[in-house]
Image (tube, rainbow over all chains, first blue to last red; front, top):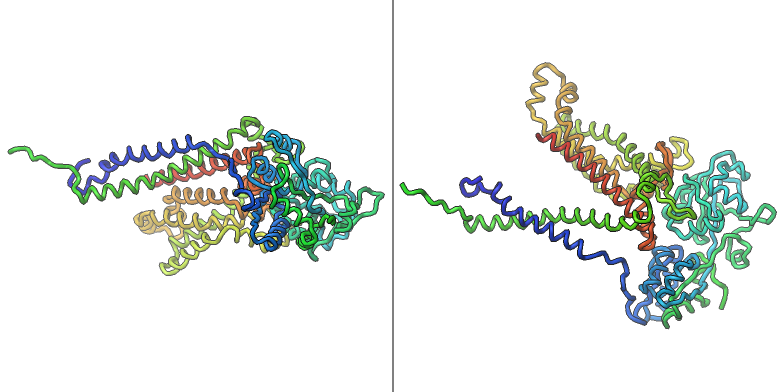
Length: 305
Length: 299
């Protein structure tokens, strides 16, 4: 619509702007189509040998490895260590595509992951660096103090739904576990439940601390935490292998002598022999100083060296 | 008389103005480009999942078990979790928002209105993780006592918090819609003898209903996409339930909780993108509906 100068802002301007808008949108969409999608850590190699030691993997171990890294760096000021979580699975994935020096894991390496490494002409070297116990907790008001592995499995799979079936009061059982991506979730599923599924009404909490908090507030609650997360607000449950064995309370001693049934090893994996700084770091973790740090964080040192 | 030749080329001053407007239009189109890119990215990352897992089993599957001897990726528990939490939030927020909007626009004196509006905006400024923390520590204990539950980590906990989070959006936009109703409507109604209340309920509100509906849908759009709060207070149990007093698992919380520790390239990773795509489409639909309502009202 043409009128006096100054009133042509309407359709006149739009006619000018329209092709420009079209070009911008088309260019943007073309950019997307042609850029492809580089996956994370695509060919990113860790910063050169000896520059920074990269460790990725288990979230269970991330506090422990970070504590070790701090101790190591203060003893070796010219070396730097970078620690990341992301889960045991992501640690192995990073090991396979070469973006990490060491992978921390709260579970052993899987067949498929070994094969993936072999396909790249590398072999997995495993070092056990600490032990961990999965501790089952209940509310302090709950009279139950011990459970057998079968009873724990029954509770978690939904077979046992009332505390009175295991010697407690006549109320329902509220289960607090970790998210399905947690190594601890998978470990409990395998070790305690024999691979069966958790009951659908089990509440999946985002962290170990929130499990402890929830059980402290809920008289009917049961959950699992690690040795380093015990407080006076929750009650530890002794675990018996079966109905004839004596229940065993979790502690550093019972983990090391294998009498506590729900213990696991914590590992470092490297693709082939680790670099010099990697080997030095593993030696540090297994040394006396490393063992003290592990105990402080709440894990069980290997007791070797 | 010779015809006057009108030189319609823009004068230098006008040309500068046009250039500025073109640049601004380019910037505005950026949001369109970003939206399109996000949508394409979601499809690109979700496609590998549908190559190994049938769409029907995903959409109709009643179990979400990404880590199991028998892995199943069923959307129904997550969808029902999102719907239950959203429905609960809607039930709480809509009456409150309508009441507040009606009060602020029709009844409150000007000074009170100017005090209430910023307070309402403040609610929107509180980070969702703070709401989540409040729900985890304070509200869950209160719900435990009030309803005699074993645990206060339920859908109701999330619904209450989400209703509070959605209120600012709903109230502000509803209030705008109500104020846009011409005074002549109100005056005419009062002139024929209707009381203030009758006018508000039977004349003003119906006249503004498109805008109010749009406001409600936009508020609900916010509720559906809320992640941190629901992750902290719902208990995240992937069960299909219609009860607000049960623990539920929403689509947003699932993505947030599982994506961080999911190995790249696995079916689980791509399944989470499929869930994200579903969420994107649902939110798009709701906002699209809101837009339709708004346009219908503007006519």
